[in-house]
Image (tube, rainbow, N blue to C red; front, side, top):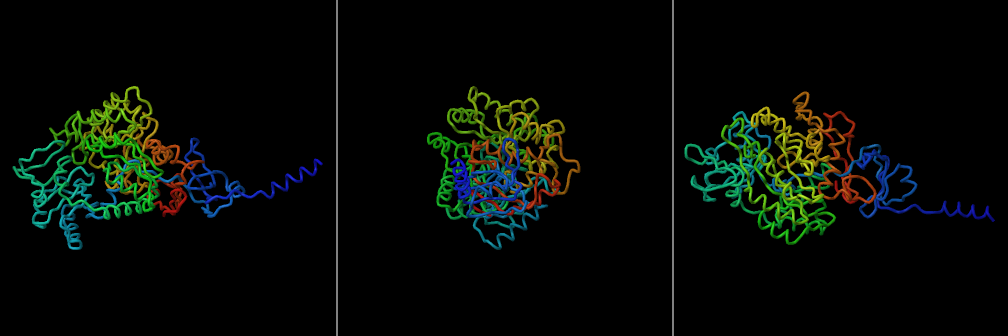
Length: 537
């Protein structure tokens, strides 16, 4: 009788069917980015989530799949998360004159002329110029624009988004004169005349006159941005500053399946949005998370709008400026602290960082696990680093390799030691969220990886790296682009690693960025991108 029972058990076991799943990935080098930073060979996916991670043999024995991906030894990573970018802004920039990489003001003008010949617009806009890349590093003035475009308004924004140049037609349309009052920035004059340069908050005087894109144009912009991001392996983007209308459109497009990108939405923190969303409360779907406010502390270093505690080294008497008043920053922080929302504040200069870190400490006293962020944390005074013990640094490594040519000129040799201090910031909090700030910088997360680890530009400068004491390791960098970025969004239990129960957001690369020579990383290609187990690239 015993022999019959054993034989029956063997027969039943042999006849058991494998579990059916939607997808299995086998023969891969899977960087799970789990707690042990372990690698695996294979995993199984069903209903958009990972159900098993194991060896290829174990997955093949246990599962029968509708689709099988043989990775042929390729590296597989969790989908990358850009912790600070302007997703909608990227799409909209595709509809403007691209001024990135221009080497002179004359080249800017030529691009504008060529663009207008093709488009014949009623209001010309563009973005991406940077006078620091020109032989003449002073801000441009509007005279040549006025000659080329005497009747058509023109407004072209600096690469960092914190300064713009407008021609007289745009200035007249906005009703701006030398006597116009302003706060939170500057309207530059020379010899009692407007130069056309607007810095930080006064930019709104011009921007308010630019025709607002309609729903179809915004929809197309979002789809353009999604295509670019999927091609580069991004599966979640933190859009740093969205209006209610944009958030609602994103939600609609996601629910109809027209937009598949996951978006962590930072709401633009103006009075209207604060009132609306603090009353509404946080909201979340599988693809959209609306639980944070994006606040502006100051401007940018490149335009000398970042708020400094001492004057700029290359502009005595100029300190930069806060974009919002201290009273508004503190009262808003108090309101947000009394809600479930996160506060993420743009702070670049050491004064802005100091004010916001102190404000965070005051309003969050006794409140645990709020995960508030300082966005950029670019120049930090030595005594303020300790204040990051309970504040997440959200940084963009390519800012260091873009700014290193002129940043020390701005702040001098002492203050620059607290600049772009990624490792110091990581050591204080224990985690760090990494992004690009695109379209200020290029979209590619591989440039983020390279800049964080090598701290060089694409011309291998400087040869030994820029302030290498603040370089990150490859493991730290990958975590900053995946699991730590997810943590900063309160999403570490659903994404950021390849683990059972998490969304099947993953990418397959043509080379292993954890192993190849670091100078080869920028040329990495994404072979395939998956969101929810669905191939989107």
